[in-house]
Image 1: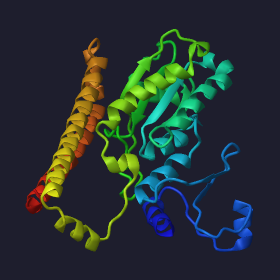
Image 2 (image 1 turned 90 degrees about the horizontal axis):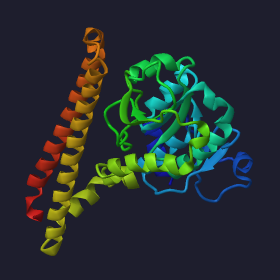
Image 3 (image 1 turned 90 degrees about the vertical axis):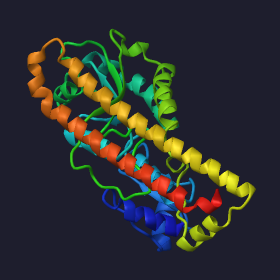
Length: 327
């Protein structure tokens, strides 16, 4: 457990602070009594969640994702630019509730529904809300393509890049150089009032998105990834024979298909975002010139993501060729 913790600490040191405690007195303060085995605990300045203890898989990727997604509030009031940027930078898609000021009086009851759903999918999706007519949201709403005269609330799942499956938690966390909005899913709730919102409606929207995304998520993103020593890896590659070779071939086929599906999804997502930007100015083509920088940025992000996917695909094909004795 200590080795997994230290590996995750190295990967996430740019996100939060890490420390180790061997003093029984201090351990008693945090745990109630001195511990006889390693315990990973997240301590926050949060009245609802002061201390959280990790109990998941002993894998750096799984622990890193848990730390990152639990370091923020279960449902965050995104009323400042800094809170918006910090949530967008974590690397997990964000369920964003943009609502009219009329929702404010019933916000307490509304958040109960969102907290209930958020608790079920916390490691896959962050939750936050803002009032679309209150700063700083009017300017961000414009980036999201929401007309200032629109009524009702908007439910959307957004990210800072074109990766709806979230970041790769087996790599070190680095703050993105720029934070734009990419829309993965969106529903305009029209004249729906806060009283009309139910947990079932929220879950249906969230589950639909996650069901689509998880088909393209690599297994290590969903279940964590155990780091294997090179000597062990070499022994594994040398082992398969006969029936085991058939299993290896099926596994390679599965991984290649998953990579192709991810490549296709990222391409389709990029095209959809470009098309949406063009649709927004279809009735006023004179505004197209002003939208060119943001469209160019979207295309550039799409290009970088596709290049990475293609390199990963070539790497997987090379791995299959190098391990042909397994097939």
